Each structure stands twice: as structure tokens, then as C-alpha cells.
Image (cartoon, rainbow, N blue to C red; front, side, top):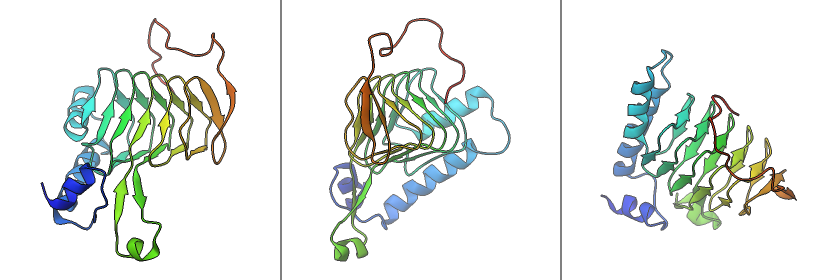
Length: 201
């Protein structure tokens, strides 16, 4: 492990223009390209590619291609989670997604944070801040979750929202920046037993 990779994994400031990190990024790009190829992969082939690409893939996880990530090894996805078309997960820091999460099309989970100081930013320094998505969350299409944000369990994030700070569990949040508009009632929140939905957005 090179110095910049060590710093990245530790959450410290690092330089992404590092040959070790570039090689890891090329590996991720190649695996994503195979996963996103025009021909339809057999389910077992897609599952095998995801397990090679990502840090953890729970049972029953489905990701509809195209899917894009920086490295893959920082991404952990819990059982039963569904990710719709064109997800972008930039994982310079851990991205942890719980169980039974519904992620709409064009959702972005972003961990890279650049320096506010213009000189340091011009020099290329950045760091990653983790993103955590709790169990049974629904991220509507086009939602963006910014570096360092946690979304609590059962919460619904409206389509097109930009989440710049933590959201508590059991709420509905919408807008740019996303704001809580109401709490979920007892008949609305919490995972339900029974058959899983076959498709989702």
C-alpha cells in the first residue's frame, strides 16, 4: 500500500494523482466496464463481478447497469438493497448502505472533499468523508448525498434533493439543500415482513 492510499484509507488529506491509486482506479473502471457491457450478463456473472468490485455485497443486492465508482473496495451494501440505473458512488472514503435500501436512478453518493484553501486545492489535495445510508432508506431519483453525510433508517429523500447534512431516521426530506418536511407516521416507517418488491426506484 502506497503512502497516498494509506492516507486516503485513514481519511487524511492525500494526492489522488498517485500511481498506486491510479492502478486501483483502472481496476475499478475495467470491472465496471464489464458489468456495464451492452450484452446482458447472467445473474451469477453480474453477482460475481459485483463481489469482485465491491467491499461487501449482501444477499439479494441488485444494481442495474450502468454503475460507476472510484475504487469499489470502500463500498458495502446490505442485503436486499436495490440500486437503479446510472448510480455514481465516489468512494474515496467508505460508503455504507444498509439493508432493504431503495436507490433511484441517477443517484450520486459522493465522499471526496476538496480543500477550501485555493492553493491547496490547486495543488490537488483532497480527502474522503464517509457516507452512510441506513436500513430501509429510499433515495429518490437524482438525489445527491454529499461527503460526510448520514441518512437515518427508514428516511425518504425526495427526487432531485441534495443532502448536505445528516438526516435523522423516520423522516421525509426534500429540496436543495434537503430539509426535513415531516416525520413518518407509525404506519409508514419500518421494514415490513413478506415478499420483496421485484423492482423499485
